[in-house]
Amino acid sequence: MRTLRRLAAGLTAVGLTLATGCSGAGSMGASENQVTIAMVSNAQMTDARELSSEFEAANPGTKLRFITLSENQARAKITMSTAMGGSEFDVVMISNFETPQWAKDGWLRNLSDYAEQTPGYDEQDFISSLRESLSYEGDLYSVPFYGESSFLMYRKDLFEQAGITVDQSPDYQPTWQEVAGWADKLKTADRAGICLRGKPGWGEVLAPLDTVINTFGGRWFDEQWNAQLNSPQVRQAVNFYVDLIKRSGEIGAASTGFQECANLFGQGQTAMWYDATSAVSVLEDPQEYPELVGKIGYLPAPIAEKPNSGWLYTWALGIPKSAKNPDGAWKFISWMTSKDYMKLVGERLGWARVPPGSRTSTYTELPEYEKISQSYGPLTLRSIENADPEHPTVQPVPYTGIQFVGIPEFQDLGTRVSQQISAAIAGQKTVDEALDQAQQYAEVVGRTYQEK
Image (cartoon, rainbow, N blue to C red; front, side, top):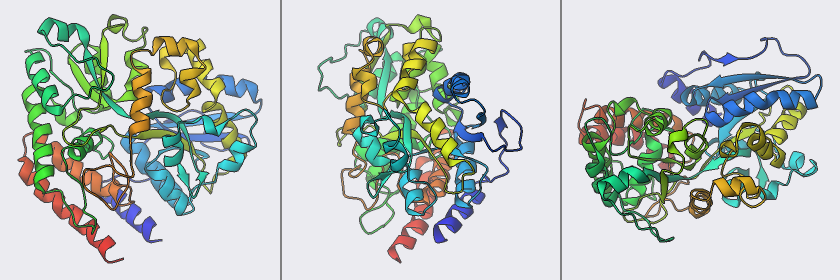
């Protein structure tokens, strides 16, 4: 129960509880054949909801009810409900942060037996790094809907206009110093040189920032769980990130997250964007941004000291132990994460919108997707495969995770630290002041592990 108390206290501390608002389809009363799905309102999930009538047609009598939430809201509501043994959700959208922890605590159903008994499902087709990140003691406890690492997206036409030449060799990794120079040169009165997340949230600003901290030689804790957020390496990395935003980044960066950066890049208001590889599902969609077709270049996550600095993340689907309709839940999950679903998305919505980075077969058995993803598909796969959450930093650490620290307390700790960073980006305090406060938060958490 110690983990549950920590989660409840942490979520309450940041004002995120079960009272969080939501939007859904269907009535509040659950029927025997209803499957209630809690999911994040990202583009790929919106597509799944649009196509859900296909599932209902193939499964007469089964009614799907979706609860769609913003990322921060979804984390809070799903976490609290699952931790408390609530039965309001049959399917929950979680990630490789929650899955192994919740499996260990007994909050999720083991999905390996379900997968093995489902003809043609082929769980071995999932990219191995993602499959391992969603497993506990060798068994799957959630399955990936889409997976991602991070990379640098840039407008090739704007680079050419600015006279910037990019090394195109396969093993080239840009440095953050190079990227900063490009951003400064590309910045204009009405266009940012680069878009970087600044919005509070451990899954918002800290996602890209933690990869910068890692490659600059920083870490959250040393091997003895001593907090390191005010170390010289972390100060250098965060100052670099904040200064780059202030000098050549987007206006209002303290409230800019993934979706806002996607909009800015898609509308030509920023020349570069460092973020999730999954962004291609929107940016490369000719129906969404026809003017961008053929104009986007892709490079590996920028580095300083540590190579292969991209993160590893997956939005996945799991079944809470207390779900009312686990069999119906698996039927839906196996449909939404199947090879056939990938093909359905391509045929119905366009091949650029196929959920990326989950199944190897997406890149090897769908010639239509392989053709349209030539500029980013191989790099996406390579970035995901090279990500190493067991060794995320230059120096050894006692935790796993690249853009997060894989402990329950990180939901609260990461949110609190992110608020300090956002305040520094907004100019409300200095980076040193923000990190001194963040260090105090981290010291409290570190002591609980030193006492074990």
